[in-house]
Length: 119
Image 1: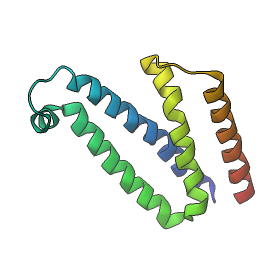
Image 2: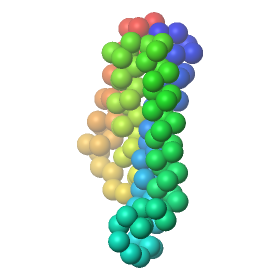
Image 3: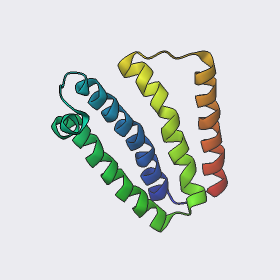
């Protein structure tokens, strides 16, 4: 995997938690709306933004997979998922404990091992 591919995969890994944060903001905004769920969904602009973001990230993922084998790209997706609890802790002040931090460190170490093995 070349440097450009690693950068693309890393950008995708950061885009995933950004989308999750957008969904969290949309959920908080939903609490300010009234009416039945279908009406709230249509009026929830942060939710529409989150859907759009996920559509864009799906296109980026598709592009990555045209260049990189899934077995090499997927660890970045896992790393992106690991960033979600950290972002939730930093932005929404959600609880974080040492087990979560240790798990994140292990996932990051695994990503480093995999990317170095592919170089």
